[in-house]
Length: 112
Image (cartoon, rainbow, N blue to C red; front, top):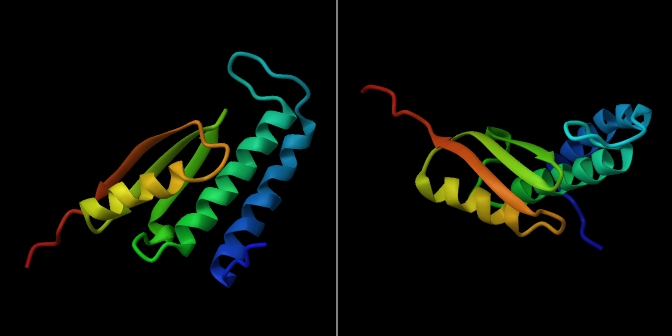
């Protein structure tokens, strides 16, 4: 069993609380997920956020994670191209992730 850091545990708890609203959904349509699909996506999102929080190369608080039908979308700003690539690698390594759309960008450098 994996032990989460306090930061990862807080992220996981926030996602779990937010996913309770999924219980009101009843069936899947072309644009809406069923409750089971939503819960699977919420679980994937939680796992990706926790994995990003645990990774020393990625500042997880700078990366937003959304999941829809197993497709993870990453967005936000990081300090380097290596962090952009690493965020995608970490997300792809999570079980249940079908694909990753990486929209993470490098922060513009402030003028000196």
